[in-house]
Image 1 (cartoon, one colour):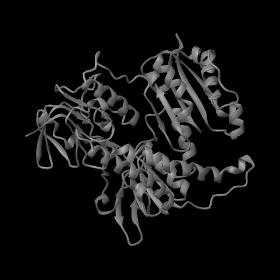
Image 2 (image 1 turned 30 degrees about the vertical axis):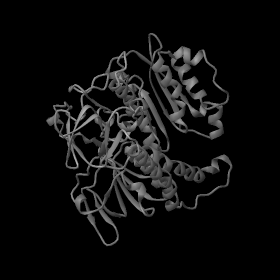
Image 3 (image 1 turned 90 degrees about the horizontal axis):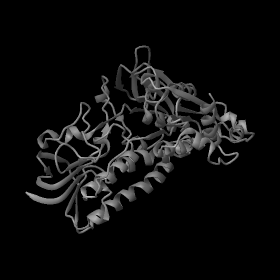
Length: 450
């Protein structure tokens, strides 16, 4: 049995090893592409695909600004090569750098627990004084008859297609489906999207969802409450059969969510507890129930957000290093964004959650069209919405749909994290005029005055 001071399973956020650990003998285990999902197949490349999609869509709607522009086509291969021509070298160089460190052994294989703090990898048995589980998540498999007989793409590989498909079916209604639906439809693909439930983006505020669906359905064939009943390969594509129709597509994308990789780790042999969804149970220090074992990221939370995993990594590594007092994670004011078009950003409670929790709240709402920069954009559909406590003006939640949503919401995220109320944020700071941030200022004032 080989002994290590620290074993890390996963090279995403788990790769953020502090420099002060240089005296430790570390095993870094990665069965997939070095750097994890975000770098290689997730948030970073997808946003690099979203930007040209936004530009293509802008060109198609420039007439409202008095600009005579047109959209002809995209060079999909050039976009793909630009994206992965930057990302792949980063992944490769990161692996080479880690492999070159005297105290770190990078092991490119699958890891499984064989006992308490004991791991089998590539025929070797490793034991670690301390272990960090950061094994991430993977796309959920599509359970529809015929799916096993045709090529089903996921977010892991759809951005590496050889060419732009003419026709695409997307199964799913979450943020991956919304972002990829935007990308491919803006590039010129005929997109049909199937959503099991009655609405897309079910974690979002209902008013935001309705606004998004109204706009998105003008660009894709959005089929809510409907799934294909089967798939079959044909000479010219993939036959998609539904309860009411049949049609062919070139590509099927499954975007029905992601599952933590804990089921591949044999956690039970290590005595590590997980919940009913396979997420490892951790405390505020990212410690599992087994002493000397920590977990972070998609295996240890239900957010599946890179910025959450990074925050957890800082806490876990500090605790592993013996920092005093022991650092703790805070999930207060965790934001998220959907980089589709329109863009969405949210933090805190939705109005539905506030009602269900019987919270006394007030709502403020301001359309982009009610601000000077909104006039410049000729924007008639975007808005910001904030919820504040009716008694003390605490900011309970915020939701923005429209251009720059993920940036506009940041002052509210900061306010929630630092305990600043709506009055302080709206009345005691300057807002640049006529910047689009005035939509946030005015939504807060609307809530305070309601």
